[in-house]
Length: 208
Image 1: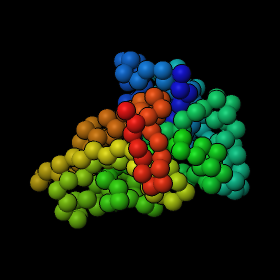
Image 2: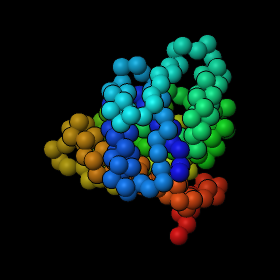
Image 3: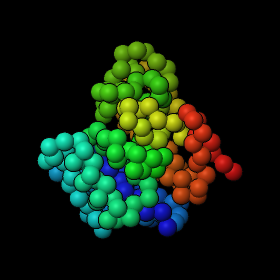
Image 4: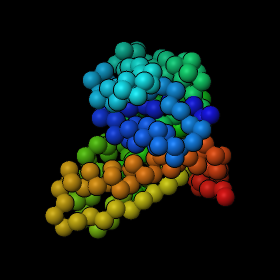
């Protein structure tokens, strides 16, 4: 049984997608051992509670340094014997010690086709605003392993979503979530749980 720690900051729609796949039986041999929120007002906390999943708020502002924050997160994940950390709309920066502790075992979902519209400051609605400003015809989502630099880790999966002529940032965000994010993140977890992801330099090899 793969024990997953999901980290959230907002509404928790990607958390819900994972919870649903586990409930439906399409994510076999997986369980969410803990949910960690950086925001005490995040609706994701209510989702976790409804699913009877242990949930804790660990906020960066309550720690004097990044190292102290990382230490608290590591201790929490070890307490719940977490094997895979999933960033599902988590907005706080993780430090080097946490990333090294869970090297190639932290995955993130990003609402664009990396390397487009990514990096520091590109979160929430912003990648969709920039996609429309740039006039791209295709956007999408990316699941990748996490490294210290924002959105820089090896790419696991990507899925394209068409940009429609009458799109607003809000309609595009909703469609990217429904058509790409909620599909890709559970699938990446499934591949990880089956031992089918191999990191080779900058590339992720998906084994048969």
